[in-house]
Image (tube, rainbow, N blue to C red; front, top):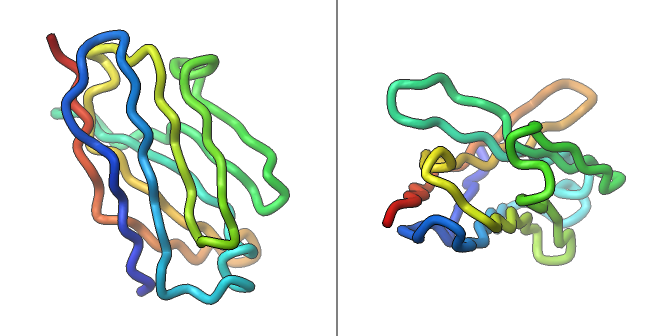
Length: 120
């Protein structure tokens, strides 16, 4: 299992912004570029839900509830991905997880999760 480390979470007021980062520091660059990257979240008492994804070709997709507010991007040279979250609302409160997924066989590497709390 490749270590995947998320950072950038915390407490923010409604309407605020956070940028989550996810890094696969031990993964070889050429291998990193073969993975799609997804962000998921799990709120208390709820199932984990997919939030956003970016393919190896940088095609991005989002769950409807975050469209226009969240932006996913990737920096292959640094083996990182980002989730820019704007106009945060209390319903965005959750533990956010980064997952690297290899499209040809669905091999998946998960991060440990990071807490995002939106509250006044």
